[in-house]
Image (tube, rainbow, N blue to C red):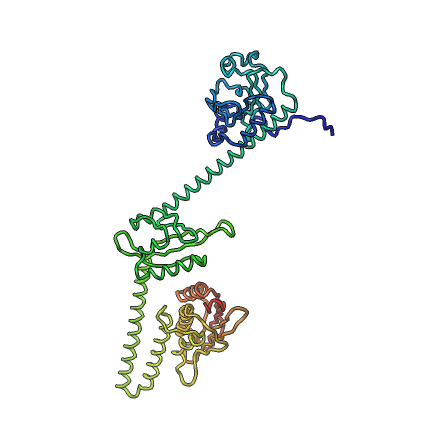
Length: 505
């Protein structure tokens, strides 16, 4: 390698012919946002060093705009711009090599230029073109003197000016990228702000201490009040009966960093209250950073009222069914007293009705009796079928398991449906039939098998009725388990697998 065969070092891209179109070139220049780039300290350091390197009193980093030549950094001159039509840098457009004018007064391209004939009476000019990453000529790093330079720049100076121009171009590109990134971020933030302002919920954010720093316009629309600033400011907008519970849960969540979720009543501008669901989550950009909270307040008044009406109707229906049981039992007892010969039948019949009434209570959500034992629940459900003195039609074998109050209702629905279906069509529909329900465990699951024996022949007709859909919804949905139905020669067999964790929670 010949270390003496050095060439001027420049990482500057070559200009591209497509930017000979002035409109396209100006589009690139505009993307640099010249006002934001003025008086940049790194560019200033470059022009100061360029002036010393080339033994010239004046040095500039320029951008050629549509009608002006703008000086982004300058040394030895107070002006920040000059008219574009007199700029020496016009002659660098589309070039990548240094343009050097030793004596402008004797150069026919510049001798009549007002910058030469009038102050500042430019005599010497050397401009290294600045080329953007796209390949557009955007300006120069130039040095100027009001004295002619008989000797042109030597190789070291030319190389140094090229290196400095490359550094200036990189600085311009870096600043442009930062400006564009800020603009993109600002645009995204504005789109996000418009989206948040447009949602039907109240949206807010707060710091780790619960001090609010943002509420969307829905707060003022609903409350006709200024947004709260600290956590205590919003408590007067909460129904007095809910206020203490909300404040306690709010303080607990903010102290522990847990998500906040609560339903409560909130006051409107007209003084009325409505039910809302408030959700909030803590977020930090990096581990160890302070938490920032983001939350929403959603109107659930109509849903809440609809659920309350549904529950009221369910309670009324359950009450009427219970009354029907009582009326039928009363009528049966009355007939038994009038017909002593039927007394044994009436006694068995009324006991069966009472057992059915007790089983019905387990399928009334939040209204049935509490039962923490799987076997205890099943025995109560199947009591109407086990009243005969000589045999039981539903026989439960195997292990027992603790169950939560949450799963008692879906379990009762499933086995109540199986027993009712069997009483209509299966083994429980005849005196000689019976059902064996075995309960075991396998790994983390409770395994139950419902086997019918002695009933009429059964077959799969390929249809799915309401009962099957109810079992499917209860087992796979609420109990997070699985089930399989098989039609055997001896009778229907159903396998039900439920995770132990699902029964306990």
